[in-house]
Length: 186
Image (cartoon, rainbow, N blue to C red; front, side):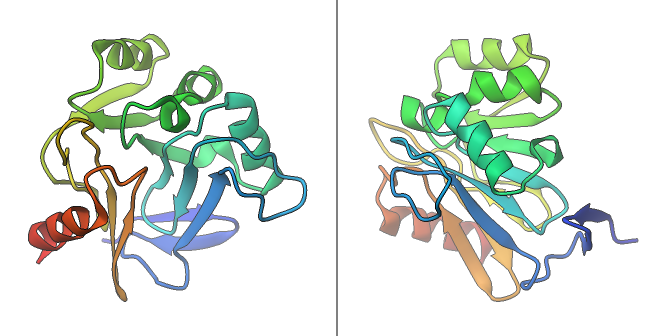
């Protein structure tokens, strides 16, 4: 039996349909659409799999939530938050998001300070540390912690058209991230 979920009025199966996979940048320092607020940092929403993912949160909760709503996305539809690395421009809006939408699982590298896990739990969300590559759910994986110094995880989307990598700052370098994703899935 295939699990399904309704996204923007469309039913999406557990097996990713390339036409239904959507990446929406919701926080960035480059304006690409009138009406959106910019800020230093990054965040995107991944739709089209069994669960909707918020990858990173950007620096400001006000900007994140305003942009999500301006883009017609429904924050309550987000099931999973994946944090790439412990820099404020990628995690700063986490508390603001969890204050309003705590019914999520938050995946973050094991190297994050203990306060992150405590904060996530305090808001009632599920805190999940990662250190090795792993499947989060069908078609969506983490590279696990990569790099030295600044440890970072990236998201791997296994689509019918090939692998898609989503990185935060790519501190471990894109070549290492791509090699880790390829080694893990092929």
